[in-house]
Length: 147
Image 1 (tube, rainbow, N blue to C red):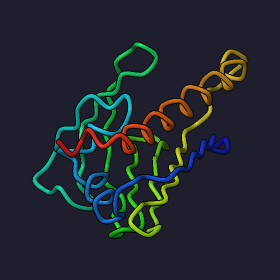
Image 2: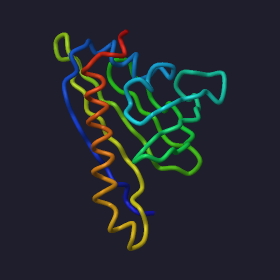
Image 3: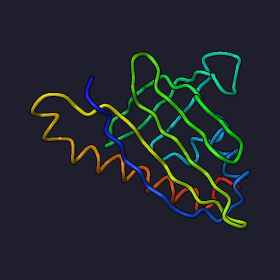
């Protein structure tokens, strides 16, 4: 199996770490801050760690559906969402308190595209993933989700 591609972005969020953690681990609110995530619907009764969801994303103008799992949720420290069904995709939100603010590092892992066309597309895919992560930081900073 090829090594996963990794994209990382970091930034400061002007809200307390517990507030940011609760937002990123709450399936009913997380789509307001993850750029491209249009909907997240539970597949079972559990909504905590281990819960499975159907996610609908809009990326590069196309709609994609993926099953996700809330893999980890360590209060005020880490939230990890992973893909299901053979998907090696994941996004981890590493949080740390920085006074009244939150230091956040977003780490996205995904399988690189295969073949020559996939190889040639890798820089574009990485750039798109980075743009979505940067916009996610922006959405968190703006605080419109607090309304």
